[in-house]
Image (cartoon, rainbow, N blue to C red; front, side):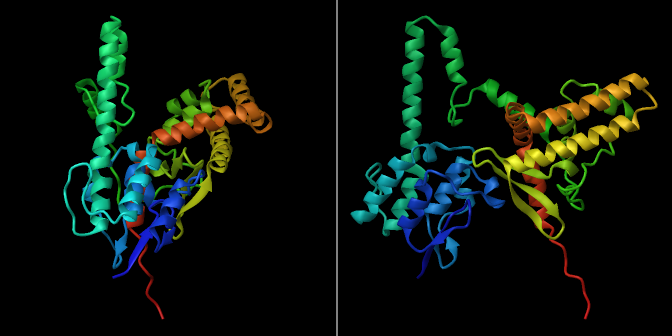
Length: 338
């Protein structure tokens, strides 16, 4: 019976468990592959620290569904690794937290990763929440109490107003995918076929024309060709029908995005020249060009633009992931011949 560990982020593999722990404890995280964008940090960690036995991972996706938006384990990874190492070192088969006995060490490791250690961290947060709430009441500061209820970074406690907001957002952000259409390749111009003259003029006359255009473009599922990862400063872009997605550095994604935005802004300005005053048309053309030149020459502006463009892509990441699943699911069929 052979065991093998796979990093769910980058596909690094090893037959040795300690190699995988060292891999995750590195200061610089490994780069994500396309599939890893569908998992939370905690889900990636668990799928990587539990082995594949005879090519099948001992944990299934449904078993980690409760960690869909969690990074609680990753934020306490050193403590977690020490607990798992203690289990392996002492060949333990009984959980020290709940006293459940297991026939195999690896089953105890799975149990601790999936359940007991997570519950301990969850209880710590709940206890701290209670202490903070009591402190706020004693100080008579209701504002602190109210803001505290909304401040759980791991989404372990969600109040009714948050649920309502999230539900509304899910309705607003819902997109319908055409299974026959792949997104526009990143090297090509975005699809603006749904832009009428009024919308084009509105974008061109917008002081924030570059980010304004990108936000409008990404409302069209065909233009969702970028999946950015702010944590690793990298991302995946849709290349074409055969290569699918390729990895790019975030700075290169933003640089290419700015050049494409500039070109399409100039195109839209030219397309609307017959319905605006000539002076306005000339002024807009100069401003489009000036903004781009300033961006290429000023490092401070480059940093600001990088953050703005990255934020727009990050805000649309979930929708872009849905598109990517559709793309990878519909691979091109081989062409017959001889």
